[in-house]
Amino acid sequence: MPEGSVLVLHPTGSPRTAEALAERGAPRGITVVDAPVSGGPHDIAAGTVTVFAGGDEAAVARAREVLTAYADPVLHVGPVGSGQRVKLVNNALFAAQIGVVAEGVRLGERLGIDEATLLTALTHGSAASRALGGIAATGSADAFIERVGEFIGKDVAVVRGTASELNSDLGRLEGLLDAATK
Image (tube, rainbow, N blue to C red; front, side, top):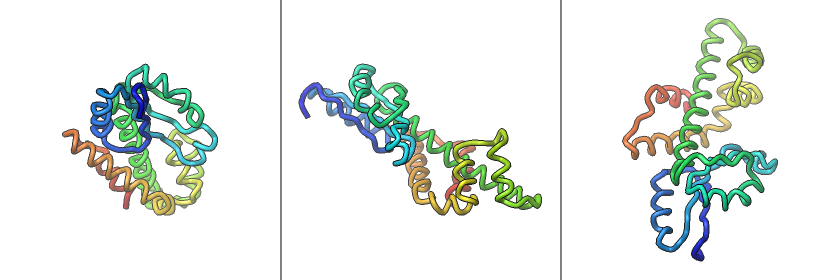
């Protein structure tokens, strides 16, 4: 890459990888923006995928014009590595929400409420969320987990690995993440 370039990283992974790439690029005048995305292919096509951008303000500003061609919003969340950190928390919370809904469905069943009825009702209450909406649209918590399980499992593995790598733990999220991946 030529001197003065900005390298934008979209994969979700370790903040340390982004930081190491930034350190390697700095002597060559290359800056790094870690910019993992939240959303799916339909969001990219619509230009509404969210980008969590970590990096120097000037580098993020330079990359913004390209990023906004397919992302809105583009959120500058701090120095290099911060995009990964925010994305990992986002993934942990999304998986935990799936786990909470799955446990809520089990409670509803024990209380004698049909799952489809419960899911439809909950999407109109204070429990509404993207995770709940996705589960309701799929028809059941188990069907949703089956459909997205591979991706959620990968995301949860990255979250767990990164938390360990950064000498942290997942606290009370741990059990909820298990519920989302079973």
